[in-house]
Image (cartoon, rainbow over all chains, first blue to last red; front, top):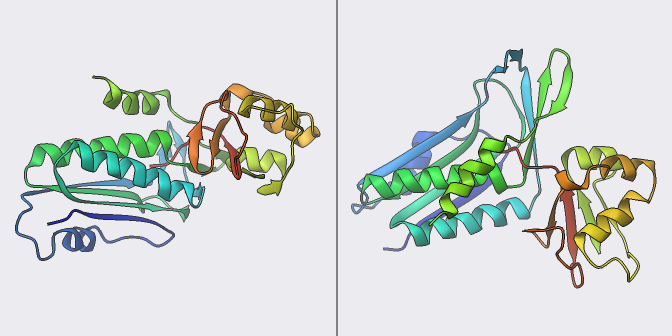
Length: 155
Length: 83
């Protein structure tokens, strides 16, 4: 069977259970599904966060995620993957991002999900703006995120 | 070529996109950043620290020494913070 790849960028929330069901429906060759959800917190280093607003580069964001999805598919024996990234205003407790990976065995699914998230953070063109009591500001990129992505390129 | 700006680069420049025809001497992404920075105060502010600016040509990340010849769309933005 061919692998199912779903990539969506949307304002609306997503339903994790429904997305998992869509990835596995009608198939009996999948032994493992790994699900990662990124969720908006109400605290950043002691500062209260009222909301995040996510901006993206339409066209490039989809292309960049697709490139990494293709790499993941060639690197691990996946039967399918789903990446959903929300944009717009998101309040604490709400979903931001979903990565699902499906495979016959758990190891490939775990590794591919981590690989996709590391690359999403380091190279997918999305930017977060935080609303704090003191005003709004753009979130600064974390050096650790670049390092997390770079470790996948080591031989 | 179409030039797009995102996040605080967009806010500082004061527009999301524009169509520009840089002179022939502007060959690389780095040259283009230098040329843009001289277009006025808002641009000078947006591009005051070139090393933090990321660039993409036709929806793919590029380095500062990449040639811009043939590019349809060039985008400038800060380091990404999605996920």
